[in-house]
Length: 210
Image (cartoon, rainbow, N blue to C red; front, side, top):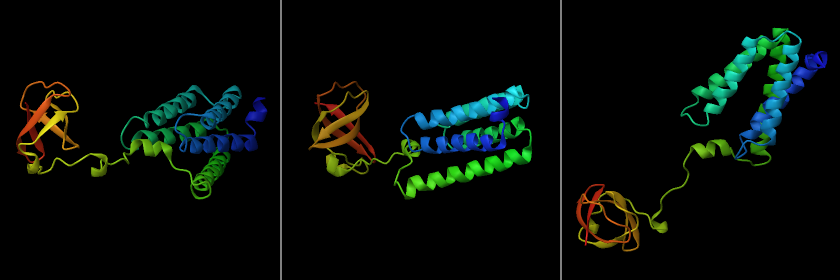
């Protein structure tokens, strides 16, 4: 089993499966079968090399650290954590391998196949990067949907409306079927209470309970 898992061809296949699995996860809304298979392929790689005495605890710790950094990329801004995680994974592969050249060739083949699958998913299957869509807000507040800008709304001065949310002191009111973000004059105003606009200061709209 150990000889099989450390065979150069098997190593290339395992790394390719891992890379493709990670790529496919970019198009999934949650961690699924592809990601599980990819991680399992990496585990088999390290298991075989550890049993063969090629991979030490340092390589294993670096591998785990790489996975954690990639996982943290889902919650941290920027791409620093993910970049460091990928670098740690690649370095751990080199540390675990018996032949640096052979491992390098296997990694290059895995990267090539992963990039190929990535472009196939976009160009041929017309898939979207769900992972990055979660990080970017594409929805917009349109006037047709009942939302309006608070900038220079002097036309609302003196108008009355109904508190759509509780004002404490910030909240939203409905004035002439429009949703408007406001602040109360200073006190707490219950939801559905009648209010009146008493002051407009640029983007700041101040209301008082009627």
